Length: 373
Image 1 (cartoon, one colour):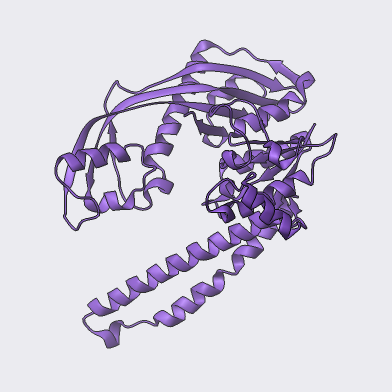
Image 2: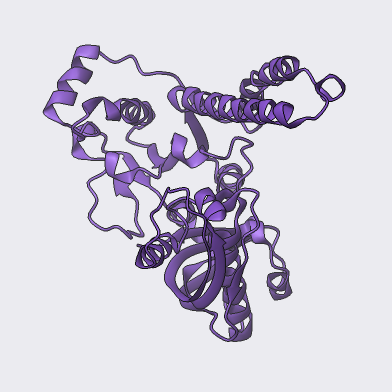
């Protein structure tokens, strides 16, 4: 029986406030199904380190902007301000994050897994034998992953199984299928027969639900309700992949979806409720396609990263126009008829479900999205 869910750092990265939907769902489900969520100490320390680095980078950037502004002020005596004092005040606030993180852990009764006491000679031996997770030529890259795996392994027993939730699945498992709908067992190198991993939240939720199969009841919804839900799922996904703050920061970036080209449909789905907890659960696959136009200039493009869904197409179009990336050349173009088509694994939950009409009230925070490769 699954008893522990261990969280990897990459699940929490860029969620320093710890407010994203997936984590909120896990916490809710852990209370319902009596599961222990675990943060390895190495994950906590890495998260604090990432926050500290990002904080320092942002403050340094702010100071550079202050310095540049000072140089442009016409009357320095009148318009001067104390940059050093502001910087010191900001840097003091960095220490507050560790308190915030541990308060969150305490509030939600998350188990902290201490650093495992491992023989360093054994770790070095594994590195040079290229045993998981030390499969990279730069063997030290797997060190933190190894500590996470050993921390998870120490919670396993014949009766208690462990799930590791990670975006780095290949470092822990021998992958047989990129789009597996099952939990992947830990690689045999770890000798952890009761430890499993996945990068898909819906797989975790379904595994927990399967343990309570006697409480589940299949539910049938009208086709119109299903169509309406999957249309909303598709539009929510498009908002995430094209307009999210994570992708574009503070810049204004408008994408015009061409009229009558947007399609969001169900490929497969199932619906059931947990009778004891009045928990509505829909899982399935949504298929999305559309065509769009958008305008970009060199300044906006510099703000994008390679995760932007049309990044490679934009680069190819620019190269065809003879524009060299990362040059100081200014440009502005409108790109037409860019096509998008992809399938996503989705999970949608409604707590305190009472009647079919509850489905009509869409909750964007109830949807978990996982792109299929």
